[in-house]
Image (cartoon, rainbow, N blue to C red; front, side):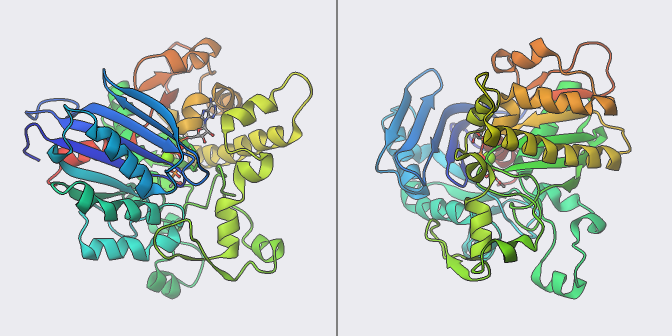
Length: 426
Ligand SMILES: Nc1ncnc2c1ncn2[C@@H]1O[C@H](COP(=O)(O)OP(=O)(O)O)[C@@H](O)[C@H]1O
Ligand SMILES: CC(=O)OP(=O)(O)O
Ligand SMILES: [Mg+2]
């Protein structure tokens, strides 16, 4: 991308949140970081108004407010644009590229400029990412009118996992049907894993293609990834982001037969009005995506609150304790399996995502249990000081010469897209 004075906008549509970052493109090509952050904004609680809106201009305006008129992703995006218009130095006409995180890209392996064909492709995949693809498309639809000088580019979470070999990505079902219908493990959070791989490579001063990592992206949606020689070998999410670890409102892996015993309406189609494009998922999928996970176990989707409740001194909150230990148990299932898949040759176990980056309790709990595999003891002081430690990657293992590390990485999907956009041929 050859541009001066240009701005790049990165939009990350989550199930009930929208994270937006605005960057200026650094002139010249010799910077480690090709873009410079100008604005960060995040809107949460979109589906449970009032939405929480934050808007921070680097060395400038800061807003934190509850906004009643935000009721879906497009209205959240419109509110962001209104705030941007109040910034005289950040003219939206200078935005040349809008990068959209699209969770399910099917077999698309590279970012694409959104034209009718790409739009229809993403829409067809909406049933396979019911909390996400519709939200991204709803924002994409508003871009031509809001940002008429900008090209919309879709970046796919699935792309990082294209390296997963068939014996790992295939399900044990009729392969003719599987191929016809695209029924296989796709994996998600790929933009986050790309960012983490690059950041850990820089931190450890080792080329990315030599690294073996077990990465935990633990946020509202949580997944684990096994990276061998800098490529995804396996990941815990599957055909859809429902598989693997439980999340804020998602069950994670269950026995598939459970759905027939949970409710006898499980197989009926439900029309999900929360998303802007038409969706047809079964009631079972709807329940397991939106009424399960932490919300079902504890009544809250905030893992920070669950952790605090689980550790209350005045008696144990059994629901919170169950959620905390259940989550740690499922995370360890993947750490153990991936450690074995990597033949115990692991450079680092990496914690990331809202929970991985902020829960010192979960890191300590899991850290203690993986020590038997040769990971260093999680240092209480370092672990407790992550929030106030500078840098993208923080080492939380006890100091000393270690072959394996335990790291925390502040992941940034918006920055990953802006970098790829600026360095690529978009
Ligand atoms: N102090 C904390 N301890 C544990 N978990 C936290 C803390 N603060 C936030 N979280 C968790 O992080 C989650 C958000 O993570 P994030 O990766 O931003 O999610 P997403 O992008 O999937 O919406 C929240 O839902 C909350 O459960
Ligand atoms: C794929 C996925 O679950 O994404 P998120 O964690 O942002 O909801
Ligand atoms: Mg996320």
